[in-house]
Image (cartoon, rainbow, N blue to C red; front, side, top):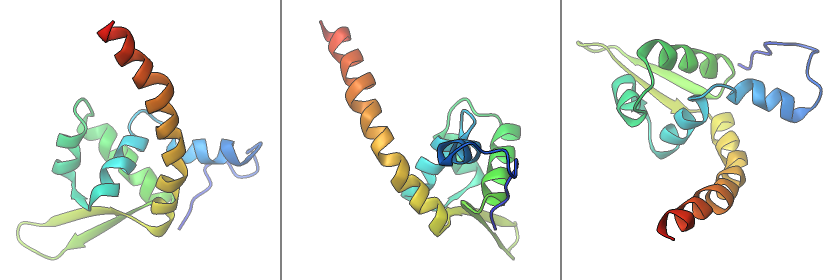
Length: 116
C-alpha cells in the first residue's frame, strides 16, 4: 500500500518519485534487494557505513510506500526477510537508465582521469 507523505504537494512525477527514493541509502537498498531477498544483517553488510537506525527507518518507509515487502517467518530464532514488491521492481527498472548515466558520465571519466 503506497503512502503519500505530502498529498497534493507534488509538482510533478519526479517530485513524487524523489519523495520515495530520497535519502542517502534508499536507492542502494533497492539495488541490493534487486539481486535477491535479504535479511536485515545481510543488507547492513552490503551497505557499509549505514547505521542500524537509518537502515531500519528507510526499510520502514520503503515498506510504507509499497516498494519493499517485509516477510516474518514464525521460527526460533525469528527470521525476517526483505524483498522487492512488483512496484519496487518497476522502480528499479526506472532507475536503471540513471545508473547507466552515472557509469558513463561520472565513473568512467573519473577512472580515466585516475589512470592518466
